[in-house]
Image 1 (cartoon, one colour):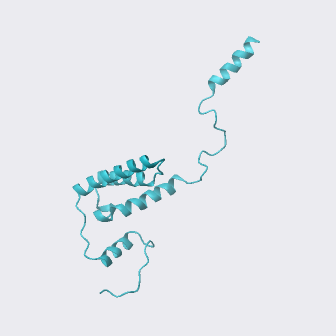
Image 2: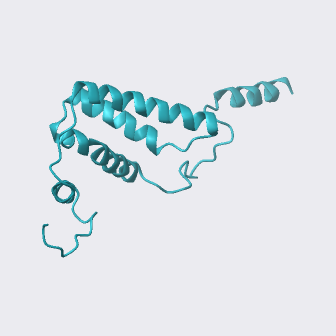
Image 3: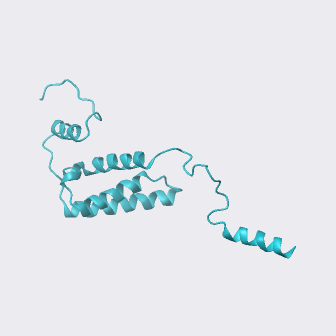
Length: 132
């Protein structure tokens, strides 16, 4: 009797991890892959980097900071105070980048839109209007 009880106790001690996890069941029920998430973050980075001349114009440190800002913007806030914290953190990150790298001047809106369309093709619809 005592041996059987000891064996059950040892079996319980040997199990590791969360006891609620079931073998063979996905821990990612939404089905979104890491590659899809990385693509969304990269698109957000490209959007944020336009004012700095694009992602390729940034140094590696600036790209890292921009990635952090993009990842924060992709988070779903748990409440109003969490939303404010995220917005403030992104504002501080982008403010620091703006101090280090002044914004690239844009001559006019049409030139700006052409540049953005060249950086992210298929994202913008170009109208057939002549330059005025």
